[in-house]
Image 1 (tube, rainbow, N blue to C red):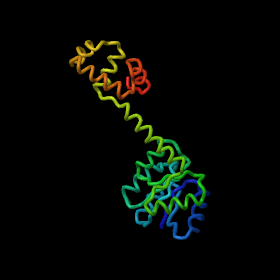
Image 2 (tube, rainbow, N blue to C red):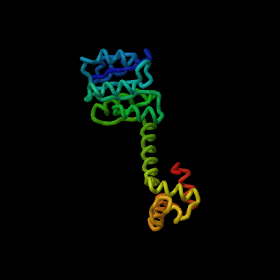
Image 3 (spheres, helix red, strand yellow):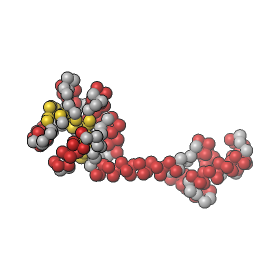
Image 4 (cartoon, helix red, strand yellow):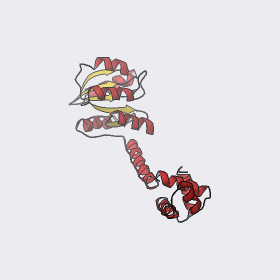
Length: 207
């Protein structure tokens, strides 16, 4: 397994080189302190995995990940960073990282993550994996409350205090159609009445 390291902290970079070089089956073929240095050096370099910090000086790690993936799509990329916020995690994954390990993980966790990545896995620190799971759970929950454009219009009319007939006239639809839409709105918002529907719609930012 041939690995390159991009880490701007000189001490950490050397420690990573020492740690990984001593591991059977791993060869460090390059290590640099910036994305710019790495990009100019790796054009003709053969490697399997890029271990990259996200908070690099100059070009950020996410941009480097994207560029390397464009030029060498076969390379696997492991983000190795202190950042655990949603924006960095999703940006790195979207750019092409297949793994995300937090600095502070044990040497063994890092080595196992590299082996897992090389074997087709998607290693992540437990804290990051939990964040991703919660994100998908929240996304699934929000889908339940998704109203169509017409339903949002009618919900706004309800908030404005309009009666069914007034809503029908305003939107040029029949009162029966208004009733059907309102029934659907109640179902989607899990509401039993007008007040519950309006309360949930406000909380979800629908109106």
